[in-house]
Length: 458
Image (cartoon, rainbow, N blue to C red):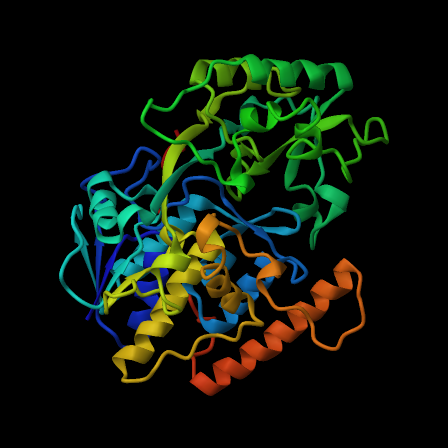
């Protein structure tokens, strides 16, 4: 039996994958007995930050990673595909349907026993996978830190606000995805754009800069992930930082003017029905009254009803290059593994990929084989490559093409053709690896169950 602590993306992916290979699993999760400050549901695999699994194109590293996971049998990606909502060139999901579907798959699997319990100390059972993610409890985090010394690090992450669709002033906004990307009209109109002129944008930036913030406690060291900075941190870096970041207007033509606005705030659907939208890239540590006041100055959101405000939460991770071997096992501790965001893989897809990888590693070991790791030329292999880099200044990272080795004996290519060639090589090498290792095909027959009633997003 394999014991897994944490029923988030990595833990659920690992449990379902191991169970599908005939391996018994005990999955320990503190819900429904307790929740972290960022959680609002008792379902497993809750998406607390965004409903987006990011870019779908193979010329995007995370799009390549998703396709590799489909071919390798990922349950998380199979469910995400079943409950996707229009999002232009991205894969976004109805977050309630997603977590409900994963919960049903886990709880109905006869090889998975779910135990509701808060874990404060590392258990003695082996093999053990710790997949408690960025919100690892204080007591367990202290026990891990005692085990590994000062290598256990922490920084802070932020979540974006959600507004009710009924409260948007639709006469002041327009629907369009950047460069009209998407497979159909629903995809191309998945984003709502709130346009700013130059004076309005500069006044908004000044309001964000001067807003009252929720400050960390004196003893806490705040270290943000560069890919998920609070909006006010970006605003403090310069007046035009937001206009070149989450508020960039490039590729978004306002049909009323025929031009790009000076800046935009984009809203993305939270569910298929379009009852709620999140503010893309607007993670925030402003106080809630300040968020309400300032975000209502966004054109079209003057009367916005906020279903959730932005918030800051701790994100705990290990210095993986120093602490973990290539099989995600803690050095000097046979049978003790870590997976997902606690290892420093950043993002939903990357976290689930960590669960898929640890399941494959454990399947090999439990069957008396040395783990056969994915080729370094694949995005799955790139996840492991990232975990072995920069031990002296290790930072969480999303998957990028820089995690894959460059093309050999190839002419110098521009970015798009180069990414296409890297993706083609990756998928060919992945298919060869899957054939050699006898991995099962993707769970194409997987059904994502409907939930009987939608719970509140607040």
